[in-house]
Structure formats: structure tokens, C-alpha cells
View 1 (cartoon, helix red, strand yellow):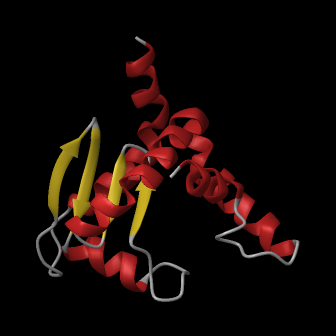
View 2: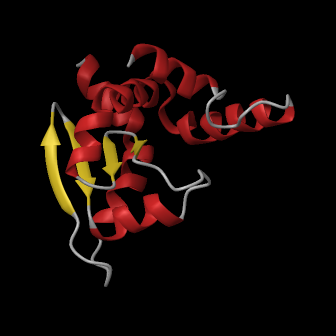
Length: 129
């Protein structure tokens, strides 16, 4: 039952990630399940990570609940340990994960720190990976 609860608790954030499965003219999105997490790459996912994140040069991967977005299969493999920390964070924070993550970035930025590298969620993920 606890595992089921973690999936349900993170479901609102997971649903945001699953929206990338919708067909778009940007090409096919490839999907597979690895250790209970849906990994997506290609098509709109790759485009989003390259051009719609606030990171210079884009992002290699991003976690939304039990969905991990990657630019490609190699990026998913390379970032798997880091992104699994974010999956566990989403399981802890549930529907508050995205707002809490954004708030942590805002707090870092207001303190004159890097809003990505000094975000508490990222620091935990980099330390674990």
C-alpha cells in the first residue's frame, strides 16, 4: 500500500509529465518504463528541454513526478541517478513539488545565489548522484 500511495500522491505532477505523450508535429516521443518510472525522449520532449527551460543551453533531463523527460536515451541513462532523487522528492512533496521547487529557486535567486545549482532540491540530487 505505501508504494501505491506514493504514486497517487505524486499523480498530479506525473500527469503534467504525461502530457508530453500527446501527438505533436515535432516528431515521435519514445517511452519506456524503467524501475516504475516512465522515461520519455524525442519529439516535443527534446524540443522543450532544449528551448523552453531557463537553463543556458537547455536541460538534459527533467523530472515530473514519475515521469522523467530526457533530450535523448543517452541523457536519460546519464542522469538516471540524479533524476531518481527528484522522483523521490515528488513522492514526498506530492502536488506541492512543482511550487516548492520553484519557491526554492526563487529563494536562492533572492539570496544572490544560482537559482538552479543552489536550489535545495538540486543540491540534494547532485549530492546523492
